[in-house]
Image (tube, rainbow, N blue to C red; front, side, top):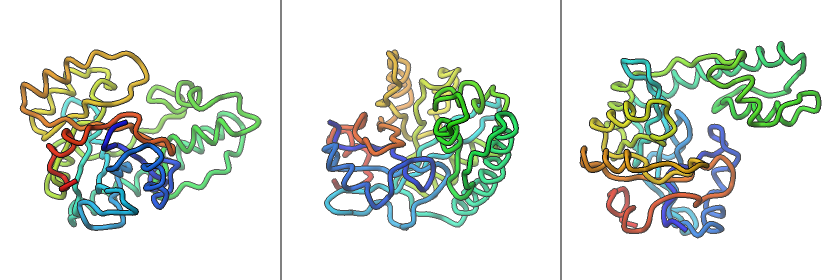
Length: 259
């Protein structure tokens, strides 16, 4: 099991794990350090990291940004001490997420002729819609089907988000945190172009559960080329942590805490 899982979502965005239950989930997984990286939201504490029931909780965030060429990628910020600029940016994003969430729900309900019975509020995302569709007795879709056939980027019920530019997102994260990393680089259709962005970052997510065999050598080459640090995490949206992450030594090299 890894020592540190640096990519975990809670109910503050689209995860199922209550923040208060993170230490228990970490202990079950044998994980000593957890970074909370909820989508486009800072955590309700101002310190870069805190201790809870013997577990180090790193203040993180996952922020979606768009490059000048129109590629959308996710940045992971770590050791966050919220600034006015970051809070303003995330507040704008959250307002747009709610508007977009309501539009997606409306499109799905109209298309399927059902009432999903979901409440669109802070932290709402497409996984909430997919779970509601999968749980509805009159919808012949499971969770993956909902994304593949309805709300995925090419789906009939998809609604795009308004997101910050890569440069703006990188800037606000760098000013507020200690480390900015490119998330899950091999998930992007043009991963080589995505990896070029790491020239302006501190790190890249090397350890990640893609759910398929991947060739990590392009990521390793980027680490060598741009002198990057390596981050890693499970991208947990449930209560199972430690699927991927970092060893104690690899975590210490990040300099996020003294742990």
